[in-house]
Length: 324
Image (cartoon, rainbow, N blue to C red; front, side, top):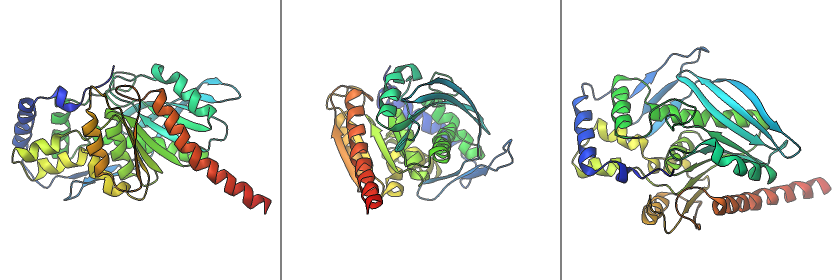
């Protein structure tokens, strides 16, 4: 099921109620960072600066792997990341020698079963594809879906110096990038559909090792604009800023940003997707696609074409150099 935009989930009245509750939790305006325990001895930490930009130190993870399928085209593996805050499930499909890789954050309710053909398609084209089961997405990784409940819970954790689930989900994408980079030594893009596109934008901003960002049928959450319109300031606004995807476009700059949106999207309006794209910095590309909401075969074809143009050129240069 496609996930609705936050404006369809939370009315203005419920948003106001959330932030009134959050204000009541403000006992100390300076609590904006924390260390944390880790079973492997590392000390994960996050901080949010005065501009509301999140920085994270994600603890290294251990993994458990199970090969589910393998043939001449690709190998599909279930990889469980054991993090300092619980297990996160991922699925990796990869050819023997990929040219590049994608870490994918799904939209709300998206399960791995809906991506089987996609994983084969990318692998056949020469690209690794890693599906990261977002916390609280209703599949194999526990957690709370993005909602009024999560916003309230995460702000309480933020105010208390604990890890918000939102930040942990960002670290999951960062750790996925590290796993792929260590395994294949190839460029890694972070991509997300709908809600997943929002998490992916933050991950691209906090982790410069991501080669680029791809957002599909996505936009800002809208929480920050709502709070400012209601006259809030200070720490609640700083926290809201830290979870808005467009906050991180200044950190992604000089790396490519690709935004895909369907004109007839019934969930996140086309105008919202275009406004989101307008906030991004160069180099950036906006592409319309046929369909309604979320990643589909048209988006896949366009992404593979984009990647093919980039890496076919690099291969040609490399081959020419060897001939010389």
